[in-house]
Length: 170
Image (tube, rainbow, N blue to C red; front, side, top):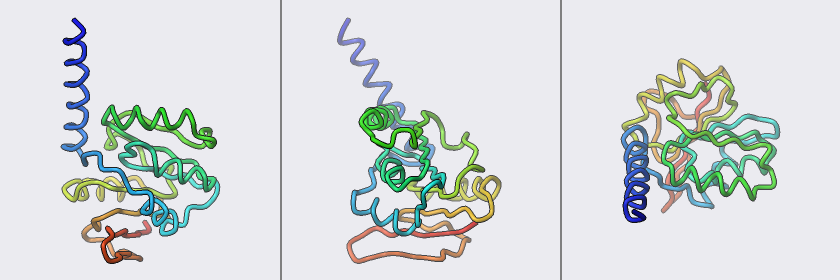
């Protein structure tokens, strides 16, 4: 009986990872140094609302909250979602962090001042349409690794041996 329960849990975890990978990106955490680079590039200010589209373990959210931002993340893979919720329990700034379980395509982006996107390139055309429809004028969008085709980036930050960031303003 225990083996069946474990198997069901493993299949469930695998399914959420697979669904996340198919709908946007597999879970690949942003490195600690890259989180710091993101904070600089996005110019996170106290009181701003930051959305992380596929927040994984919440690392970016917690860094934004330390800067005084109100950070909200959306995650569909159950394992990183649970990790983020556990980390939230120990976070000093927990009142400034919200972690939602669910599909990023179903969340409204109108409340964001900054949106962080680290997805696979195949998801970018759909995300571009969503941003154009929902994001407010003046919203800063930061992508990690890949640009949004058809948009002009105000900053293309690529260093040797590092993945790049692209900054856009709606």
